[in-house]
Length: 159
Image (cartoon, rainbow, N blue to C red; front, top):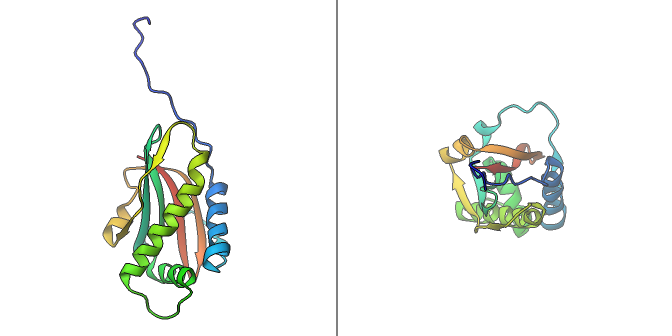
């Protein structure tokens, strides 16, 4: 090796917005009995309406993760669809639903990532941490959906 500095290889991404959209629409129809319609319109910052998130960290050749963010009304619709229940659900149930859905969607997309990567168990976030999620990260792919009168965002971010 000459005097050139060693550089870590750049991991190419094989995941695009359409992959995230497909994963969420598939979860919606197969698991939730919900149609997750792709959101049409401008790409304005929706973080003000997000109160809930499920996050699954990715490590290895890619550092970042997958996140599902939504408001309370959407989180309730997702939980009701998953559990086939109606009525008000507890915060624990909403958190559990987002954890499960994030892990399922992330796990389905992980094989599309180049290099050696691993997925950590998903976790839930609520409140102010959800709006700041990703403020120091670069979004690599994003899919937004209209659900139950609100918006759901599924994103892949690089830390």
